[in-house]
Image (cartoon, rainbow, N blue to C red):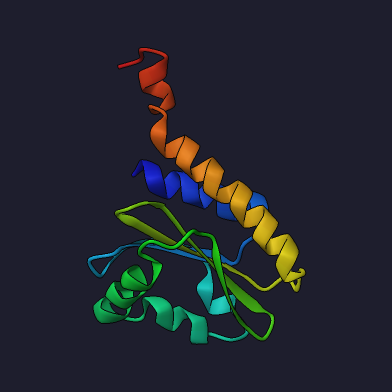
Length: 127
């Protein structure tokens, strides 16, 4: 899955603990990283079950993302790069919230750009 490889690369490159990717209808599409490493796991409840994900989708409707949620040192950056995609990036590096937010805006643009461009093998004409 192309989206999964894009998110996995971002998690690795930028040092996030992990990510959860869901659709607003209530399904988790995939997870990357090791979310068990989070010191506080309360923010995982944002994606806890189908109803929680639908509520999150409704909460994000019409809002600009990124949105940040915080519990102790754990921060969840909520992104909605497309109408049918909700991403939670989990970080516990202790970085200042303003720095996390600035990076999140860059990450959101990176994801949007990656999702809107054809895969590399299609651009090169490879079969």
